[in-house]
Amino acid sequence: MKKPFIEVYTDGSCHTQSLFGAWAALVFTDGKKLVLKGTETGTTHNRMELMAVIKAIEMIDANGFKDEELNIYSDSQYVINLRGRKEKLEAKNFISNKGTPIQNIDLVQTLLAQISSHNINFVKVKAHQKPDGTENFNREVDKIVRNLVRENAGKND
Image 1 (cartoon, helix red, strand yellow):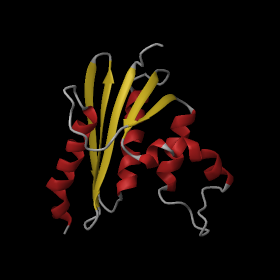
Image 2 (spheres, rainbow, N blue to C red):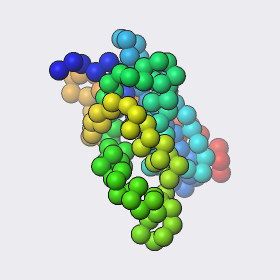
Image 3 (cartoon, one colour):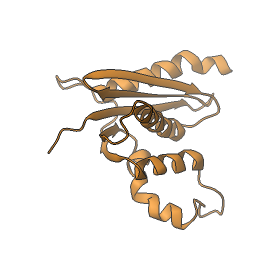
Image 4 (cartoon, rainbow, N blue to C red):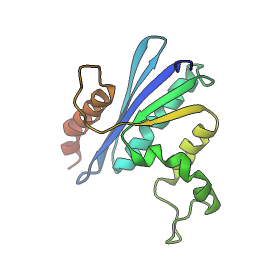
Protein backbone atom coordinates (compact mmCIF):
# COMPACT_ATOMS: atom_id res chain seq x y z
CA MET A 1 0.00 0.00 0.00
CA LYS A 2 1.25 3.46 -0.93
CA LYS A 3 2.04 5.68 2.04
CA PRO A 4 -0.38 8.63 2.17
CA PHE A 5 1.09 11.81 0.81
CA ILE A 6 -0.50 13.99 3.48
CA GLU A 7 -1.01 13.33 7.17
CA VAL A 8 -3.04 15.65 9.37
CA TYR A 9 -3.37 15.73 13.16
CA THR A 10 -6.26 17.81 14.49
CA ASP A 11 -7.70 18.87 17.81
CA GLY A 12 -10.14 21.36 19.23
CA SER A 13 -10.93 22.56 22.72
CA CYS A 14 -13.29 24.93 24.46
CA HIS A 15 -13.43 26.63 27.86
CA THR A 16 -16.99 25.77 28.83
CA GLN A 17 -17.61 28.77 31.11
CA SER A 18 -16.32 31.47 28.77
CA LEU A 19 -17.25 29.60 25.55
CA PHE A 20 -13.82 30.50 24.18
CA GLY A 21 -12.40 27.83 21.92
CA ALA A 22 -9.36 26.97 19.87
CA TRP A 23 -8.58 24.58 17.05
CA ALA A 24 -5.31 23.41 15.56
CA ALA A 25 -3.99 21.13 12.86
CA LEU A 26 -0.55 19.81 12.02
CA VAL A 27 -0.29 19.13 8.29
CA PHE A 28 2.57 17.02 6.97
CA THR A 29 3.23 17.20 3.24
CA ASP A 30 6.39 16.84 1.17
CA GLY A 31 8.39 16.31 4.36
CA LYS A 32 7.27 19.66 5.78
CA LYS A 33 5.17 20.35 8.86
CA LEU A 34 2.70 23.22 8.79
CA VAL A 35 0.90 24.40 11.93
CA LEU A 36 -2.60 25.85 11.50
CA LYS A 37 -4.49 27.30 14.44
CA GLY A 38 -7.28 29.65 15.33
CA THR A 39 -9.61 30.77 18.08
CA GLU A 40 -13.30 31.64 18.36
CA THR A 41 -15.66 33.05 20.94
CA GLY A 42 -19.16 31.77 21.62
CA THR A 43 -18.26 28.26 20.54
CA THR A 44 -18.26 24.63 21.68
CA HIS A 45 -15.80 21.77 21.87
CA ASN A 46 -17.39 19.92 18.92
CA ARG A 47 -17.33 23.05 16.74
CA MET A 48 -13.61 23.41 17.37
CA GLU A 49 -12.97 19.73 16.55
CA LEU A 50 -14.85 20.14 13.25
CA MET A 51 -13.16 23.46 12.48
CA ALA A 52 -9.68 21.94 12.83
CA VAL A 53 -10.40 19.33 10.16
CA ILE A 54 -12.21 21.76 7.84
CA LYS A 55 -9.41 24.36 7.99
CA ALA A 56 -6.76 21.70 7.32
CA ILE A 57 -8.63 20.43 4.25
CA GLU A 58 -9.15 24.00 3.00
CA MET A 59 -5.40 24.66 3.28
CA ILE A 60 -4.62 21.39 1.49
CA ASP A 61 -6.98 22.37 -1.35
CA ALA A 62 -5.57 25.90 -1.57
CA ASN A 63 -2.09 24.44 -2.02
CA GLY A 64 -3.09 22.16 -4.89
CA PHE A 65 -3.14 18.85 -3.02
CA LYS A 66 -6.89 18.12 -3.35
CA ASP A 67 -6.35 14.80 -5.17
CA GLU A 68 -3.91 13.38 -2.63
CA GLU A 69 -4.80 10.69 -0.12
CA LEU A 70 -5.21 12.12 3.38
CA ASN A 71 -4.82 10.44 6.74
CA ILE A 72 -6.58 12.59 9.33
CA TYR A 73 -5.86 11.71 12.94
CA SER A 74 -8.34 12.89 15.57
CA ASP A 75 -9.31 11.99 19.11
CA SER A 76 -12.90 13.15 18.42
CA GLN A 77 -15.52 10.42 18.04
CA TYR A 78 -17.81 13.17 16.71
CA VAL A 79 -15.47 13.85 13.79
CA ILE A 80 -14.40 10.24 13.18
CA ASN A 81 -17.98 8.93 13.04
CA LEU A 82 -19.44 11.72 10.90
CA ARG A 83 -18.97 9.86 7.61
CA GLY A 84 -20.95 6.91 8.99
CA ARG A 85 -23.82 9.20 9.98
CA LYS A 86 -24.02 10.96 6.59
CA GLU A 87 -26.93 8.97 5.12
CA LYS A 88 -29.04 9.30 8.25
CA LEU A 89 -28.33 13.03 8.56
CA GLU A 90 -29.18 13.68 4.92
CA ALA A 91 -32.31 11.52 5.08
CA LYS A 92 -33.54 13.63 8.00
CA ASN A 93 -32.46 16.84 6.21
CA PHE A 94 -30.11 17.58 9.14
CA ILE A 95 -33.09 17.91 11.50
CA SER A 96 -32.80 16.48 15.02
CA ASN A 97 -35.39 14.26 16.68
CA LYS A 98 -36.61 17.42 18.45
CA GLY A 99 -37.47 18.94 15.06
CA THR A 100 -34.72 21.55 15.09
CA PRO A 101 -31.58 21.76 12.94
CA ILE A 102 -28.74 19.65 14.31
CA GLN A 103 -26.02 21.41 16.26
CA ASN A 104 -23.18 22.70 14.11
CA ILE A 105 -25.19 22.13 10.92
CA ASP A 106 -23.00 24.57 8.98
CA LEU A 107 -19.75 22.82 9.85
CA VAL A 108 -21.22 19.32 9.56
CA GLN A 109 -22.45 20.04 6.04
CA THR A 110 -19.11 21.61 5.09
CA LEU A 111 -17.10 18.64 6.37
CA LEU A 112 -19.43 16.10 4.75
CA ALA A 113 -18.99 17.90 1.41
CA GLN A 114 -15.21 17.80 1.87
CA ILE A 115 -15.34 14.09 2.73
CA SER A 116 -17.32 13.43 -0.46
CA SER A 117 -14.77 15.17 -2.66
CA HIS A 118 -11.54 13.88 -1.09
CA ASN A 119 -9.80 10.56 -0.45
CA ILE A 120 -9.78 10.70 3.37
CA ASN A 121 -8.89 8.01 5.90
CA PHE A 122 -9.96 9.02 9.40
CA VAL A 123 -7.85 7.50 12.16
CA LYS A 124 -9.07 7.55 15.76
CA VAL A 125 -6.33 8.22 18.30
CA LYS A 126 -6.49 8.17 22.07
CA ALA A 127 -6.65 11.63 23.58
CA HIS A 128 -3.82 13.08 25.66
CA GLN A 129 -1.59 10.00 25.48
CA LYS A 130 2.02 10.48 26.51
CA PRO A 131 4.61 9.57 23.89
CA ASP A 132 5.93 6.00 23.88
CA GLY A 133 9.35 6.97 22.57
CA THR A 134 8.07 8.02 19.15
CA GLU A 135 6.88 11.46 18.14
CA ASN A 136 3.30 11.96 19.25
CA PHE A 137 1.75 14.61 17.06
CA ASN A 138 -1.71 14.18 18.60
CA ARG A 139 -0.28 15.28 21.93
CA GLU A 140 1.52 18.19 20.24
CA VAL A 141 -1.67 19.50 18.60
CA ASP A 142 -3.53 19.01 21.90
CA LYS A 143 -0.96 21.20 23.68
CA ILE A 144 -1.38 23.93 21.05
CA VAL A 145 -5.15 24.17 21.54
CA ARG A 146 -5.00 23.93 25.32
CA ASN A 147 -2.41 26.71 25.45
CA LEU A 148 -4.51 28.92 23.16
CA VAL A 149 -7.58 28.40 25.34
CA ARG A 150 -5.64 28.93 28.57
CA GLU A 151 -4.02 32.14 27.27
CA ASN A 152 -7.27 33.65 26.00
CA ALA A 153 -10.27 32.28 27.91
CA GLY A 154 -10.12 34.86 30.70
CA LYS A 155 -9.96 37.77 28.26
CA ASN A 156 -13.67 37.39 27.43
CA ASP A 157 -14.93 37.66 31.01
